[in-house]
Structures are given as C-alpha cells and as structure tokens.
Length: 342
Ligand code: DAH
Image (cartoon, rainbow, N blue to C red):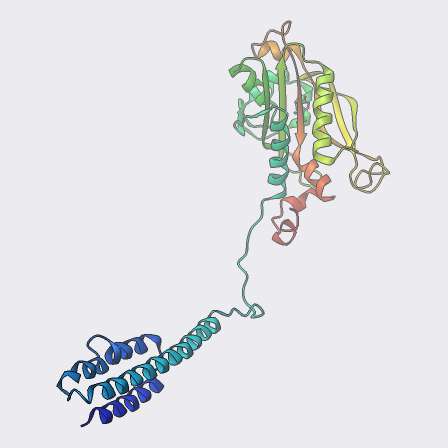
C-alpha cells in the first residue's frame, strides 16, 4: 500500500475513532497511539528512509499535512469533550434548594442558661470570680452560718427537702458565702450561680427547683454605696442606661441592713402593666451588708472587714426578659417555645 493510501486510511480511521470517543482519557490514548513517539504516523516518518530520495520531500510534506490536520481535529474534539465533561459536572452538582427535606433539629441553650451566662459575663466584667458549690448542703452552711439557727422562725420561709437532720437540698445560694469566707481571705469578690430547692407547690411563680446567683464582696471599707453602685452597674449593663433601681428596706438574717431591689419594668418602662402588676417595678433580688455575726462565724474579723451580698433570682430575670407571666413555661421543656427564647 502506498504511503498516500496509508495516510488516507489513517485519517479515516482516526476520524471515526474520534467521533466514537466520549472521554478526554480515551482521546489522550488515541493521540499517543497515532502521534506519539511510537505512534503510527511517527512510524511512517521513520520509514521515509526507504523511499527514493526524490520522493521524500513530497511524501514528507503529505505526512506533515496529515499530522497538522490530525492535531487540529484532536484539539477540536478535546475542547468539545472537555466542555461536555464540565457541563456534566455542573449538572451533577446542582442542588435543588426547593426540594422538600427534613431539616436536622438543632437545639438551643435554655433561657435560664442564657440568663446565667449573661450575668456571669456582666459580673466578670466588674471583677467577680465564679465559684460553684454543692446542691446537697449541710444544714450548718445553708442555715446556721447564715444566722438561721435551728428552730429560727425565718427558716419557715425556706422549707426544704431534708436528707437527714443535718443534710438538706440548699434553699438558696447563700451558703456559698460561708464556703467562700471559710476558704478565702479578703478581698473576696465572687458570684455563685446554681440550682436551689424549696418544698413549694408548683404554681405560676413557684417551683421546688429554681436558680439563683449569689454575690459576695468582703474587703476593708466596703459600704452600702458600693453595693448600690455595683447593682446599678449590673442593671444598666443588662437592661440599658434608662433602667433605674429601687432599694426597699427588707429583712434577711444574714444581712444588716437588708434591702430588696426592684428594676424599672422593661415591658412598660415604668408606666405600669400586667407583668409588673401596675407598679412599674419588678423585684429581682435581695441584698444587704453582710451581718457582722456572719463574718465572725466564718472567721472574718468584722472590725477590720465589711462586706455586701446579694442573691438574684434567675427565673425572675428570665421571665422579665422574655415577658413570661408563668414560670412553668420554663420547665415544661416545650421545644416550640424554648426555641423562640434566645
Ligand atoms: N438568700 C436569699 C433568698 O434566697 C436571697 C438573698 C438576700 C441573698 C439577701 C443575699 C442577700 O445574699 O444579701 O431569699
């Protein structure tokens, strides 16, 4: 067969194979088979030595022409195949965002946890350190060191669950005051968030399990104005600059003097509404100057040191924050509600 015939056949054969191809890998194999070092066209070039010298330029030109044609054809085909491959990749990666599907259920932090974290954040900024302690507490810490001796009438307001005569579920976070004073030296500046218990019936404003955050500062020359300033800063940081605090005289055995603190109702800005029972104020905490008797019982020299303490009800803050009038909503665990309180 003449070189010309071989070239024509090669062109036809490659053209057909190119049309049948549908992947860039196959095309590369074909390129090697025809144009590669050991390829069919290369073999023809190598075989030119056997031709008569006068034929060589003509045949050489024909081979080169076919090489160019094949190269051009292969490039065209490669472009087409690559475009098709890209298109197929795009198609396979398309996500139909309108297709119905089950969203994974993501949880959210409980509103009490959110409020607790926020208060911790706020008091940390004022230089307080977080200290945690046991929920199953000795009567000694929960009551006696808080100046509530056995049979003291003020114990009635904090009836709790007794494990035995000396071990109770703590009724408040105040025993942490004693734990802090007995293990640390002034200056003491701590907050103690946690769960507390009382033998109360469940209703819209009571639960046998709830949360408090205790605060305690003991140092030289601590005064009532430090207490006011601290709580004022806390209220404004939490609710904004237009919130006011109101101190009402009160009684707690472990503080003297004692006060209860109200904040401007955030629902009505003090005008009076359902949430604040038309008073314009919402009670959020009890506080006072640490009773010198408590300081002494906890090993602190009450002539040298003084202190203030406060106990914040976290449920109160959460209810105020989310405009809830029934505390039970916080404990029912209804994900439809809790997911909205963020
Ligand atoms: N322990 C009190 C209670 O549970 C709250 C309280 C009042 C804590 C006054 C304090 C305080 O530290 O100074 O009702």
